[in-house]
Image (cartoon, rainbow, N blue to C red):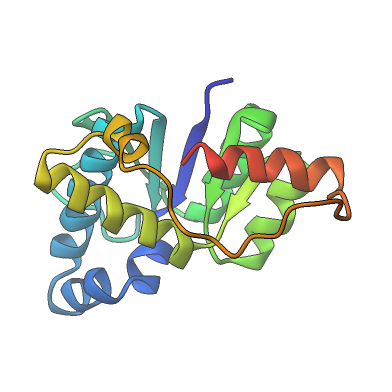
Length: 175
């Protein structure tokens, strides 16, 4: 099943340490850095990615809808917020959607529509890993060749997660 990653752009930027520093200097620099990292991530994972920004201060370089390096960029219009745009997309995508945000209102709405969610800091870590792998010329298949990694994960019977949590975890594992 294909995963469509829907990102609350400013939420992710402000939750990331490096991106938030760029955002404080220049709003456009923060957006550009995020899009650059998402392009690196897309090269490795090939998921559909849409990043949504509030349209109160759209860049002259971006239209209300744009596509750069396979990343779809959307700005909300007029009195509409990015949260409204994200909710509309989640309602349309449902099971295919994976929403990246730390906004609890969006998280609860996404879960009620059977979409998976991941917190912005957690996805930010995955973006950093993808940027590193892209910089070193590694691809996702190389990660499997590194061999066994030591773990303290116990084996044996455990309590099974609910069906919703298992579906959510399956989508997150694809990241």
